[in-house]
Image 1 (tube, rainbow over the protein chains, first blue to last red):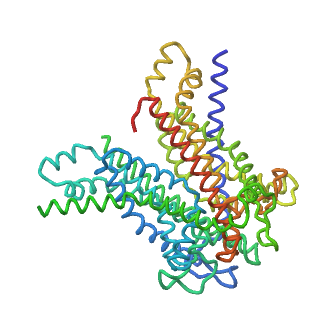
Image 2: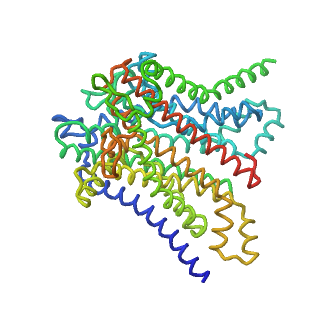
Length: 282
Length: 295
């Protein structure tokens, strides 16, 4: 009797796992299968032609790289400093609690709200306009909590004894951080950065009003130019324009590039992390 | 002496940067409030929140966001029907049934899947799922609340699974051993010991999942159909709050009532997710104390 309940229950759990992986595998398969027909060397390296119905998406790929790099340049130093304070200096207490709670909550803010914030502050108030700079700063704020948590995790994973040994040799706190803690935590921090890259590259809502443009002639010239970006390009291809059939094909191509980029990036990050964990455990 | 000053300077730099998150959070709040206040000088908050007509570009315009709120709510509910059983079920599977090797593969796979961007899900919904639904159910359009719920449900499953799995892994091994020792089988241990022990952790996962679904933008923008009317059936096209902001911000002139109204929607959205996150935080704190862990 009891055995039946157990078998049914476990069967259900098995099924849920199967369906979850199945659904997601199906989505990836559909997009890869249809999209890989579009992919070609020309698609990756050429600019769009004849009103978005032919040619490649090179400007959108370049634009995605610019925005991602910009956001990391902004968020990494900020996030790392914050993590160092919380892990190495923080006196436990009220203020640290407030900082922790605000990190948690910042991570939960909907991405479109970041977009409005960026629009009001960077585009309108600071007059950066719709530009790479505005978009990078907005994305940087969005990804800040992720970088902080990843760096925190990397810093706390480092054995306390290393710090104590350094301090015992007469090194100051800053010397310990610079020479012992940061080099030791580097792989973990790197993992966090790589995962953040994956997150930023796919974000669309924050750059809708702060950076992205559907069609531009040529490549962006400065940080104050608008850019074409892969995720926004997919959206625009599906919702604007006059040749849905041809545009959907290109959107498939963009989705494949984005999907492969992000799967690859997270795969690398997880590989680094597992190697690191194995190293720390054994 | 010189070293001492240097040390202090570095400490100060780190301290200042540590407040960045707080600064941005406060900054977002201030901006949203400041940009939405002008609207509430013209119409009452109650009329805004409960008004049933959203015609921001008409003359005179109507700013009632109740259709948008109800769309967000129903789509979220529909998505929860998919992602809660699937997410929690697979988290239980990972924790209780999967062997060491299986877990070593499945856990990172789920994590990677959680990182697929929403635009890809939106594209899938628009290019593949909604034509399919349209054909199967003979609908006038496949872009409707149902498709949005399905796509969001699939999308939130890995997130909920990851979070619930974390909660389950906090349950001490000794709980399990004690249960086996008094003669319970694995299913009894799971349903009467592990799930109750991890219950608040699991509910945290669900609440965070809700917060993620309600704030999701690109997917609903592409898939939900975009009609700002009260939802009558799940086969109707609707326009949730996030989609309204994303779709209309580009067209609304800066400083207009419409512009301020969109910021007001964002403020409500922000408040909603803020409350959900705080509740999740409070529950998870109690959960940790219950299991005898400090932070």
